[in-house]
Image 1 (tube, one colour):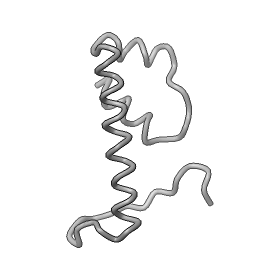
Image 2 (cartoon, rainbow, N blue to C red; image 1 turned 180 degrees about the vertical axis):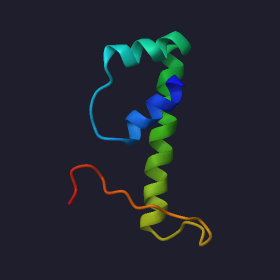
Image 3 (cartoon, rainbow, N blue to C red; image 1 turned 90 degrees about the vertical axis):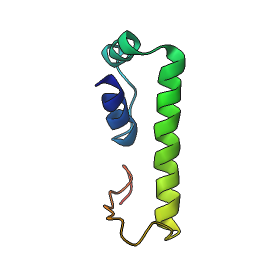
Length: 72
């Protein structure tokens, strides 16, 4: 559950993790694993935006456009 919460925090509104969120992560993962999870989610999110922007997503893939926080 901690990894899913981290994913929600990374793709949601910008902000810093609270100490409680870090404690939940550290109860389940090492610092190295937390970094790997965060980087993996970040890379996936970034690459998905690039693919969609370039029109390279599969035609059969359903897409949902969610504006980047702070954009109009």
